[in-house]
Length: 283
Ligand SMILES: [Zn+2]
Image (cartoon, rainbow, N blue to C red; front, side, top):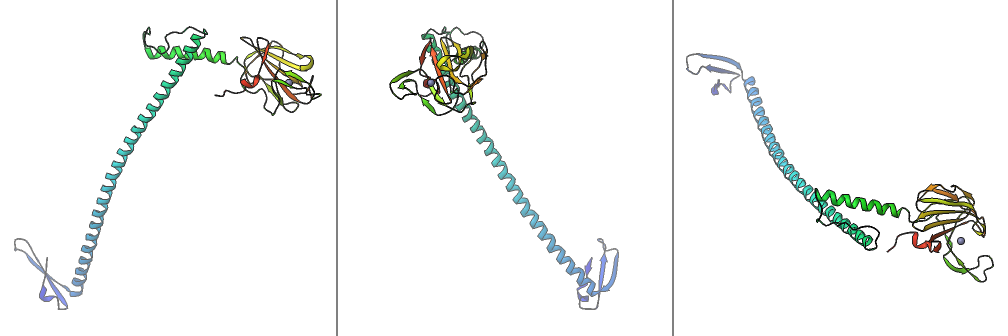
Protein backbone atom coordinates (compact mmCIF):
# COMPACT_ATOMS: atom_id res chain seq x y z
CA UNK A 1 0.00 0.00 0.00
CA UNK A 2 1.35 3.48 -0.76
CA UNK A 3 0.12 7.04 -0.38
CA UNK A 4 0.12 9.49 -3.20
CA UNK A 5 2.23 12.32 -1.72
CA UNK A 6 1.08 14.86 -4.28
CA UNK A 7 -2.52 14.29 -3.28
CA UNK A 8 -2.02 14.98 0.47
CA UNK A 9 -2.88 18.66 0.11
CA UNK A 10 -6.00 17.88 -1.88
CA UNK A 11 -9.36 17.27 -0.37
CA UNK A 12 -9.12 13.67 -1.57
CA UNK A 13 -6.25 11.25 -1.56
CA UNK A 14 -5.71 8.47 -4.06
CA UNK A 15 -4.32 5.17 -2.70
CA UNK A 16 -2.71 2.73 -5.12
CA UNK A 17 -2.54 -0.94 -4.23
CA UNK A 18 0.12 -2.67 -6.34
CA UNK A 19 0.82 -6.42 -6.18
CA UNK A 20 4.44 -7.50 -5.64
CA UNK A 21 4.92 -8.55 -9.25
CA UNK A 22 3.39 -5.24 -10.50
CA UNK A 23 0.73 -7.17 -12.48
CA UNK A 24 -2.31 -5.95 -10.56
CA UNK A 25 -2.79 -2.32 -9.76
CA UNK A 26 -5.87 -0.96 -7.98
CA UNK A 27 -6.50 2.57 -6.79
CA UNK A 28 -8.99 4.08 -4.38
CA UNK A 29 -9.85 7.68 -3.70
CA UNK A 30 -10.63 8.57 -0.04
CA UNK A 31 -11.19 11.77 1.90
CA UNK A 32 -7.73 13.20 2.93
CA UNK A 33 -8.82 13.77 6.57
CA UNK A 34 -9.36 9.98 6.95
CA UNK A 35 -5.83 9.33 5.73
CA UNK A 36 -4.40 11.91 8.19
CA UNK A 37 -6.46 10.49 11.04
CA UNK A 38 -5.25 6.98 10.14
CA UNK A 39 -1.65 8.20 10.11
CA UNK A 40 -2.03 9.87 13.51
CA UNK A 41 -3.56 6.64 14.95
CA UNK A 42 -0.64 4.72 13.52
CA UNK A 43 1.91 7.10 15.14
CA UNK A 44 0.12 6.95 18.53
CA UNK A 45 -0.13 3.15 18.36
CA UNK A 46 3.59 2.85 17.50
CA UNK A 47 4.54 5.14 20.40
CA UNK A 48 2.28 3.18 22.84
CA UNK A 49 3.66 -0.13 21.66
CA UNK A 50 7.23 1.12 22.12
CA UNK A 51 6.36 2.33 25.64
CA UNK A 52 4.74 -1.00 26.54
CA UNK A 53 7.69 -2.94 25.17
CA UNK A 54 10.14 -0.75 27.12
CA UNK A 55 8.11 -1.16 30.32
CA UNK A 56 8.00 -4.94 29.80
CA UNK A 57 11.74 -4.98 29.24
CA UNK A 58 12.41 -2.97 32.42
CA UNK A 59 10.01 -5.20 34.41
CA UNK A 60 11.65 -8.30 32.99
CA UNK A 61 15.09 -7.03 34.02
CA UNK A 62 13.79 -6.10 37.51
CA UNK A 63 12.12 -9.51 38.01
CA UNK A 64 15.23 -11.32 36.81
CA UNK A 65 17.45 -9.39 39.20
CA UNK A 66 14.97 -9.87 42.08
CA UNK A 67 14.92 -13.61 41.35
CA UNK A 68 18.66 -13.63 41.38
CA UNK A 69 18.73 -11.83 44.71
CA UNK A 70 16.12 -14.17 46.25
CA UNK A 71 18.22 -17.11 45.09
CA UNK A 72 21.32 -15.65 46.73
CA UNK A 73 19.41 -14.92 49.95
CA UNK A 74 17.98 -18.46 50.05
CA UNK A 75 21.45 -19.87 49.65
CA UNK A 76 22.67 -17.61 52.45
CA UNK A 77 19.81 -18.65 54.76
CA UNK A 78 20.49 -22.31 53.99
CA UNK A 79 24.17 -21.95 54.83
CA UNK A 80 23.34 -19.97 58.03
CA UNK A 81 20.88 -22.69 59.09
CA UNK A 82 23.58 -25.28 58.55
CA UNK A 83 26.03 -23.21 60.59
CA UNK A 84 23.47 -22.95 63.41
CA UNK A 85 22.81 -26.71 63.32
CA UNK A 86 26.52 -27.33 63.56
CA UNK A 87 26.88 -24.87 66.49
CA UNK A 88 23.84 -26.44 68.19
CA UNK A 89 25.11 -29.96 67.84
CA UNK A 90 28.55 -28.88 69.07
CA UNK A 91 26.95 -27.18 72.09
CA UNK A 92 24.78 -30.23 72.84
CA UNK A 93 27.72 -32.57 72.35
CA UNK A 94 29.77 -30.51 74.84
CA UNK A 95 26.94 -30.59 77.39
CA UNK A 96 26.44 -34.34 76.98
CA UNK A 97 30.16 -34.78 77.51
CA UNK A 98 30.00 -32.67 80.68
CA UNK A 99 27.02 -34.68 81.95
CA UNK A 100 28.91 -37.90 81.20
CA UNK A 101 31.91 -36.59 83.14
CA UNK A 102 29.71 -35.60 86.08
CA UNK A 103 27.98 -38.99 86.16
CA UNK A 104 31.35 -40.65 85.88
CA UNK A 105 32.60 -38.60 88.86
CA UNK A 106 29.48 -39.48 90.87
CA UNK A 107 30.00 -43.16 90.06
CA UNK A 108 33.63 -42.98 91.05
CA UNK A 109 32.81 -41.23 94.31
CA UNK A 110 30.00 -43.67 95.20
CA UNK A 111 32.29 -46.57 94.36
CA UNK A 112 35.03 -45.16 96.61
CA UNK A 113 32.44 -44.75 99.37
CA UNK A 114 31.39 -48.35 98.84
CA UNK A 115 27.86 -47.46 97.83
CA UNK A 116 28.04 -49.60 94.70
CA UNK A 117 30.43 -51.44 92.46
CA UNK A 118 32.33 -49.39 89.96
CA UNK A 119 32.00 -51.00 86.54
CA UNK A 120 34.29 -49.29 84.12
CA UNK A 121 32.10 -46.21 83.77
CA UNK A 122 32.85 -44.28 80.63
CA UNK A 123 35.74 -46.52 79.65
CA UNK A 124 35.69 -48.46 76.41
CA UNK A 125 37.41 -51.54 77.90
CA UNK A 126 35.30 -54.64 78.58
CA UNK A 127 32.41 -53.20 76.62
CA UNK A 128 31.14 -55.45 73.86
CA UNK A 129 28.46 -54.86 71.25
CA UNK A 130 27.37 -51.25 70.78
CA UNK A 131 29.65 -49.28 73.13
CA UNK A 132 27.37 -46.21 73.20
CA UNK A 133 24.28 -48.27 74.10
CA UNK A 134 26.24 -50.06 76.80
CA UNK A 135 27.58 -46.86 78.34
CA UNK A 136 24.18 -45.15 78.30
CA UNK A 137 22.50 -48.27 79.66
CA UNK A 138 25.04 -48.32 82.47
CA UNK A 139 24.48 -44.61 83.25
CA UNK A 140 20.72 -45.11 83.13
CA UNK A 141 20.91 -47.88 85.72
CA UNK A 142 23.12 -45.87 88.01
CA UNK A 143 21.09 -42.66 87.71
CA UNK A 144 17.91 -44.69 88.43
CA UNK A 145 19.54 -45.95 91.59
CA UNK A 146 20.67 -42.44 92.59
CA UNK A 147 17.15 -41.10 91.90
CA UNK A 148 15.61 -43.89 93.98
CA UNK A 149 18.01 -43.19 96.86
CA UNK A 150 17.60 -39.41 96.66
CA UNK A 151 13.81 -39.78 96.88
CA UNK A 152 14.26 -41.19 100.37
CA UNK A 153 16.31 -38.20 101.56
CA UNK A 154 14.19 -35.38 103.05
CA UNK A 155 14.69 -32.32 100.83
CA UNK A 156 12.71 -29.07 100.67
CA UNK A 157 10.12 -27.30 102.78
CA UNK A 158 7.29 -29.20 104.51
CA UNK A 159 5.45 -25.89 104.85
CA UNK A 160 6.42 -22.38 103.76
CA UNK A 161 6.43 -19.61 106.32
CA UNK A 162 8.60 -17.41 108.46
CA UNK A 163 11.14 -19.27 110.63
CA UNK A 164 10.19 -18.76 114.25
CA UNK A 165 12.83 -20.82 116.00
CA UNK A 166 15.98 -22.55 114.78
CA UNK A 167 17.74 -25.81 115.58
CA UNK A 168 20.00 -25.72 118.65
CA UNK A 169 20.04 -23.87 121.95
CA UNK A 170 17.42 -21.18 122.38
CA UNK A 171 15.74 -19.23 125.16
CA UNK A 172 12.76 -20.94 126.75
CA UNK A 173 9.86 -19.82 124.52
CA UNK A 174 7.44 -19.70 127.44
CA UNK A 175 9.37 -17.92 130.17
CA UNK A 176 12.15 -16.36 128.02
CA UNK A 177 14.49 -17.38 130.83
CA UNK A 178 17.06 -20.16 130.74
CA UNK A 179 17.99 -22.04 127.59
CA UNK A 180 16.79 -25.29 126.08
CA UNK A 181 17.93 -27.46 123.25
CA UNK A 182 15.52 -27.13 120.30
CA UNK A 183 15.59 -30.27 118.18
CA UNK A 184 13.96 -28.86 115.06
CA UNK A 185 12.93 -25.87 113.01
CA UNK A 186 9.74 -23.93 113.83
CA UNK A 187 7.93 -22.53 110.82
CA UNK A 188 5.11 -20.07 111.43
CA UNK A 189 1.72 -20.71 109.86
CA UNK A 190 -2.03 -20.51 110.21
CA UNK A 191 -4.11 -23.30 111.67
CA UNK A 192 -5.19 -25.49 108.75
CA UNK A 193 -2.23 -24.74 106.44
CA UNK A 194 -1.10 -27.89 104.59
CA UNK A 195 1.96 -29.79 105.84
CA UNK A 196 3.68 -31.91 103.21
CA UNK A 197 6.01 -34.85 103.30
CA UNK A 198 9.63 -34.11 102.20
CA UNK A 199 10.67 -37.61 101.00
CA UNK A 200 9.28 -41.06 100.27
CA UNK A 201 8.74 -43.28 103.26
CA UNK A 202 6.31 -45.04 105.60
CA UNK A 203 4.25 -43.37 108.34
CA UNK A 204 5.68 -44.77 111.56
CA UNK A 205 3.44 -42.78 113.87
CA UNK A 206 0.44 -40.45 113.59
CA UNK A 207 -0.72 -39.79 117.13
CA UNK A 208 -0.74 -37.36 120.05
CA UNK A 209 2.70 -37.32 121.69
CA UNK A 210 3.02 -35.06 124.76
CA UNK A 211 4.87 -31.81 124.01
CA UNK A 212 4.81 -32.56 120.24
CA UNK A 213 1.02 -32.54 120.28
CA UNK A 214 -0.48 -34.25 117.24
CA UNK A 215 2.67 -35.67 115.72
CA UNK A 216 3.54 -37.52 112.50
CA UNK A 217 6.80 -39.47 112.23
CA UNK A 218 7.87 -40.78 108.81
CA UNK A 219 10.55 -43.42 108.36
CA UNK A 220 12.54 -42.93 105.11
CA UNK A 221 14.93 -45.86 105.57
CA UNK A 222 18.74 -45.64 105.80
CA UNK A 223 18.31 -44.31 109.36
CA UNK A 224 16.45 -41.18 108.28
CA UNK A 225 13.17 -40.01 109.85
CA UNK A 226 11.16 -36.77 109.73
CA UNK A 227 8.94 -35.48 112.53
CA UNK A 228 6.04 -33.01 112.20
CA UNK A 229 4.69 -31.57 115.46
CA UNK A 230 1.81 -29.41 116.82
CA UNK A 231 -0.57 -30.44 114.00
CA UNK A 232 -4.27 -29.57 114.19
CA UNK A 233 -5.26 -32.59 112.08
CA UNK A 234 -3.76 -35.80 110.69
CA UNK A 235 -4.04 -36.59 106.99
CA UNK A 236 -2.25 -39.95 107.18
CA UNK A 237 -2.43 -43.09 109.29
CA UNK A 238 0.27 -45.29 110.70
CA UNK A 239 1.60 -47.67 108.03
CA UNK A 240 0.70 -45.42 105.05
CA UNK A 241 3.26 -45.22 102.24
CA UNK A 242 3.95 -41.59 101.35
CA UNK A 243 5.92 -39.68 98.72
CA UNK A 244 7.53 -36.25 98.81
CA UNK A 245 4.83 -33.58 98.44
CA UNK A 246 1.99 -35.68 99.90
CA UNK A 247 -0.31 -33.94 102.37
CA UNK A 248 0.26 -35.50 105.80
CA UNK A 249 -1.46 -33.08 108.18
CA UNK A 250 -2.51 -29.50 108.93
CA UNK A 251 -0.66 -26.78 110.87
CA UNK A 252 -1.91 -26.30 114.42
CA UNK A 253 -0.87 -25.48 117.95
CA UNK A 254 -1.38 -28.78 119.77
CA UNK A 255 1.02 -29.84 122.54
CA UNK A 256 3.65 -27.50 124.01
CA UNK A 257 3.15 -24.58 121.66
CA UNK A 258 2.81 -20.79 121.93
CA UNK A 259 0.80 -20.41 118.70
CA UNK A 260 0.11 -22.09 115.33
CA UNK A 261 3.36 -23.28 113.74
CA UNK A 262 4.99 -26.43 112.42
CA UNK A 263 7.79 -28.07 114.35
CA UNK A 264 9.89 -29.88 111.74
CA UNK A 265 12.57 -32.30 112.76
CA UNK A 266 14.96 -34.58 110.85
CA UNK A 267 16.47 -37.52 112.71
CA UNK A 268 19.42 -39.63 111.63
CA UNK A 269 19.76 -42.82 113.67
CA UNK A 270 17.41 -41.26 116.26
CA UNK A 271 19.65 -38.18 116.65
CA UNK A 272 18.10 -34.85 115.63
CA UNK A 273 20.07 -32.96 112.96
CA UNK A 274 19.61 -29.40 111.66
CA UNK A 275 16.78 -29.49 109.07
CA UNK A 276 17.95 -26.22 107.56
CA UNK A 277 20.74 -28.06 105.71
CA UNK A 278 18.08 -30.10 103.93
CA UNK A 279 15.75 -27.30 102.82
CA UNK A 280 17.60 -26.62 99.59
CA UNK A 281 20.78 -27.55 97.79
CA UNK A 282 23.31 -24.75 97.95
CA UNK A 283 26.96 -24.51 96.96
ZN1 LIG B 1 9.74 -26.59 117.72
